[in-house]
Image 1: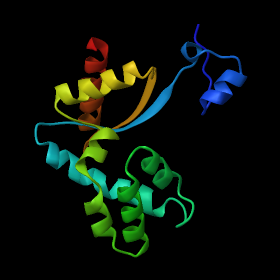
Image 2: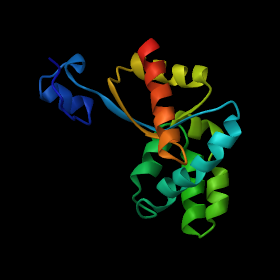
Image 3: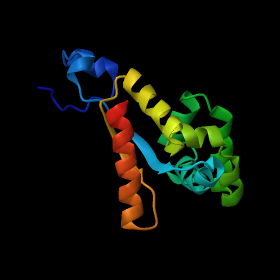
Length: 154
């Protein structure tokens, strides 16, 4: 039986005497949406990332800005935050690279989403949290069902 335990650092895991395999590792996989027109799927996600980078904290303390800086996007994180805090929200959203949107969501073709799921599995992630996209409940449930099918075959 797996123990559900939220430990945010490897050092805390070690102090607790837990092996990585004993933990249920969670990740927020963002929005899940399928389609061949990837640009159309990416565009609506950029304002939300800009909001996280710009508005979720102060100019000096912003968890998301720091996380994206550590993930290899220091210039993007700084630029987006500066633009957002200067009231230039559309420019902040435009500064978010497509690549970052794709890395923080499950978007695109079945193959693209399957590849992202495989990355999570290889990293040891056991539970993902998603937000199925769609204008209706049926559309959201359809995206969720498609994701579950891909996850079951992965």
